[in-house]
Amino acid sequence: MDFAVVVPATVSALVFGFVGAWAISTVPAEVFRKALPVALAVVAVYVFRHKDFGSRAEARMQGRSRLAAAAALGAGIGFYDGFFGPGTGSFLVFLLVRFFGHDFLAASASAKIINVACNFAALAWLVPTTEPLWAAAGLMVVSNMFGAWLGARLAIREGAAFVRKVFLLVVAGLIAKSAWDAFVL
Image 1 (cartoon, rainbow, N blue to C red):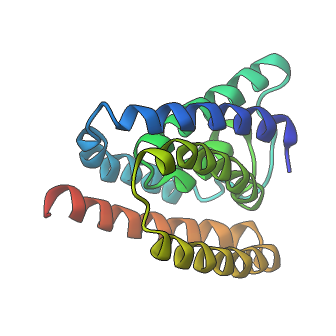
Image 2: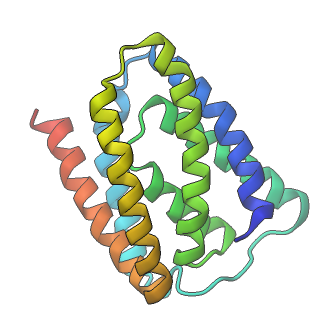
């Protein structure tokens, strides 16, 4: 794992995840709802058309520019996740591959750490200010942990090419779901 990217991105995501969760109490999320399927479609087309995208690691930035880019990535994705949320993991994986040269396996692992920071920050704001559905949340936590364990085992065993295929499948599902939510409901 590339901790020179993960650490600043995680710290920044933690701060801006909290800011995003605060912002949702003042700004409607409808703007993001309609843009989400379009943004995901752009990501899917890009990944699909570039067959070697994320197949191997190749560092793209060095030094302070890399640190600044990692912090900016964390800030942007943290705010987005705290404010809106859907597709955060997919955007993270894509951005880590595209801008930092990670392969899909390393990007997926790194995205998990950054995403947990975003989620923790959003919870820090939302739990005291809303009424969480604790029973549903508990079931989701257990299911998510089992899915993460199973997914990590598969990803490690099958490698970056497998993760790329699953990524495209998940993004296609997110496009369908978010388009349905934005334009049909």
